[in-house]
Length: 334
Image (tube, rainbow, N blue to C red):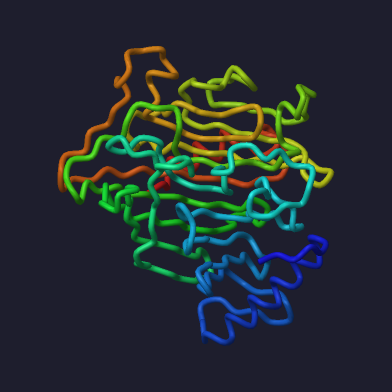
């Protein structure tokens, strides 16, 4: 949807267009006046749900004609991009590896043997079925959607209901609570033992620990156990934070694993080139155990739920008080 204009111009344009959509749909729970608004706006238009926080564009939930639903872009208060822009936009200067790393998403590389992580030939697709909730509000906005996991031959492997809640509790951080309930709706389901998954985001190129051709980057990774950078890969932790420079200032993304999730605390598939993922299944890769040790079997008709929180914050791990925010979240998390 974006034209090749400056970020500041693009943000202003999006705010104007979003205001027009709000007024055109008669949405009363969030309003825009003079380019500024109060609360969280969630507006569906042409296969994209646009989310704005207090009148400022934040993200889009893209669900039509894609291999799986995902959030892109994810913007800070000044229009800075927290996520890599390719392959949605080609702005130059970005690595073009892993074309399936699109914004922020949930997917897994082995569901009854079908790959829903990559976009390679023979991979499955997560197909949007319907919205359960689309809600704007003063304190939070909600997107809740039903999806079908469709194998290449057309049969349905499983279904899910994913709910995303958007809010900005302190005016500086931007928060997404992501909950997904996976149902073995079409027979038993095995989420297989592979590192290729699962709750993931591909970060802005400038946040990388290692730039192309082995050049050192300015990004850093910290987890709840105190491990840093490359030592965090494949390790278990309650939370992980990835920070680095974007647009001349330091910003970060913290990802919290809910204590009610299976196999809490999760393992982290977090790479120096900007892939940042929580994966509770890849035990073979992370722990060097026998293949299949990480399989999670869901009997036919049963479900399993995963919950996470993303915080898009200014500053590094310490200045954003990530550990304290995690402790506070535990007291209120659904």
